[in-house]
Image 1 (cartoon, rainbow, N blue to C red):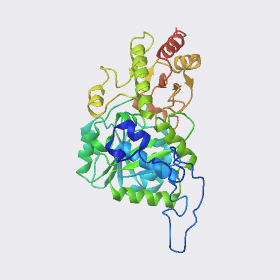
Image 2 (image 1 turned 90 degrees about the vertical axis):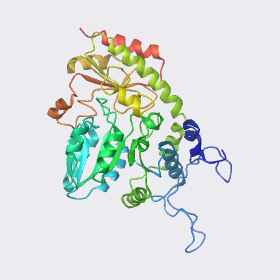
Image 3 (image 1 turned 45 degrees about the vertical axis):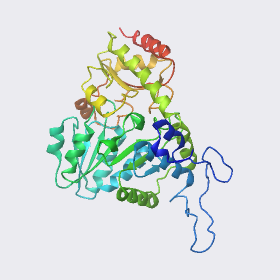
Image 4 (image 1 turned 180 degrees about the horizontal axis):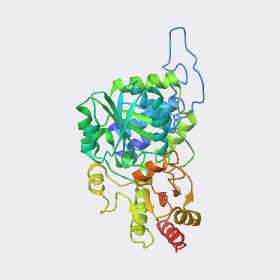
Length: 387
């Protein structure tokens, strides 16, 4: 495509940004440059690529693509979402202070509490939906505010723009894990955030066949630092995984529309079901974050959690599913179900899970793109197993 893809619509950028036809053959798909090094034309001369840990054309194409979708300065691709988050955490030093959403993915909690804590970074966990609580938590030494919105798995919605404004009073960097929404529905940089985090494993890739992560920045300063950490620490995304993720992103727009359409139907079905105690989904009008999500995003996504009171009842439902698969992860074309308390959030202490509302009867769904009727039938037959 000729011209600047960044000036085009979302799905046009998803297909074309960072992916000019390969100059030698005209191949429409970016090749997998499976190489560790590059020959230099002569001493002191380079074609822009020196060693594959530092740069790789396939990875660069993905980084440019995601940056264009998030409206960012640059993108940086890593071997996993947690590798991206661990790189983000290099922004804080010993004795610095950081504020985190109280309700985050269990792996993020584990990294902050059991790894980052060893480096004397002071962490405060805050209900970031409460702006007064955020303001009270900020200190002169606060260097980072890390948000999930909506949160995993309770789907709590934070006012990203308001938190960014508060964080600016102490010159703190604001990072938002946008994995649940994808840039199709939500673009945190436009709301004042400085860094966007994705597990590309999820909706960006969309096919459950690759693990990866990405950071997208709003400034050259942050981009230069993350590029330096990429080169120095080496937790980079492989060329093949970059290729798979770009392949998935091409259909992100159409997939997210189908994901959300199915999720909306599933959430409303669950909300009316007599054996379901509560449903957590921002697309439901009665959900506490509904209005804010509508204001700062263009959709509500495909992640839902619901409560059936006890572990035994949750197990009954999860074991009975036929279309939904019992598995960790999310964001693939197939519908997945999991038990956060014993799976994704098992590393969070039981008493803390209870404080956050992650009870033993909580089930999390990642709604896929199957036929809506089949998903509703599967939910119905599974819930019928309950007394």
